[in-house]
Length: 454
Image (cartoon, rainbow, N blue to C red):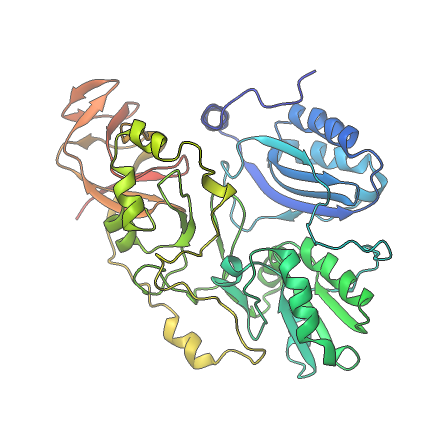
């Protein structure tokens, strides 16, 4: 019985494109007592694989945590698979603000010790004894109460690009670091303050709310459904957003814009910017904020060392990291001595000065470019630095200026000096052609290519 993926991410993306059907990006979680997580995992894989559901899911004795991509046509059938379990009947599914058919390209369900690592070894701690859930308007109202302390239970690289006004944003690498820090800071407020908390989708602050109730805090509240559900409610009900900036998300998009405020800066030059990227050096893969200008100059790398590395022959790159842990096994997200303008993001408990927010608003003005959509990226051959695109509209000729754009790639302008159509050199490519050309930066499956008209 198949309990694993048989297709690569590229093959899966191609099938999704060929199907031409809308997919929904969603997330959900549930704390519950699961006696046999391995059997639970296997049953879910069989059911979801049959529905072409993809995503990253963790299951444990304490529950389930899922971020997924589901075909819109199969949404009700997917929901029915959840209804088979008592603890997931009627569960809230947080649907993403921005849909992307390529948000997840594999179905990965892992059994973990806990669905949210908390570093706690207290058998008396009951994770289901949670705080009071608040909807968007209720959350906004409590933010206005001077007796309220609001805490962001996300990591530093998440809160750096967006957070609620006046929130405490701990400079932490992970959730388990934040619990003792906040507990120590707020010891004097157990009895008389409203402790208000939030995270991306609710799963972290749900456990945090139970933890702080266990620690003796009397008035504990949490944002129902996290920032994702808050955003949906403020748009549907025309409520003012007290969240400013971007909501960091854990798929290839790396962020959903909530407001136009840009509250962070490029980690390399200091310009207002909130676009996360990963270093193009596969031995580094550091997550950091990089503006379009630095992306072009540094070729999507975080340091001169990594820039030099990506220009080495592929064999030498492999040799340099032989025997070393690489990639996300060792890197610290957004923290490196090479990043001159990385801020910890830690704020005071006082409300952010509105003047400071105003200074950053609408600063990222770009030159307006007349452009026409030509096609989409299909592959990037990292060893030879060759990009492959499918031409879907218009023609493309040698000498044309193009704009390549995507959530992670940003916006890159280049001039086409040479085109290969189906492997043969050509001066022009037409609709339906599969083209390749040299490109010094990596492209992703979600990237689009436009012809610049002016």
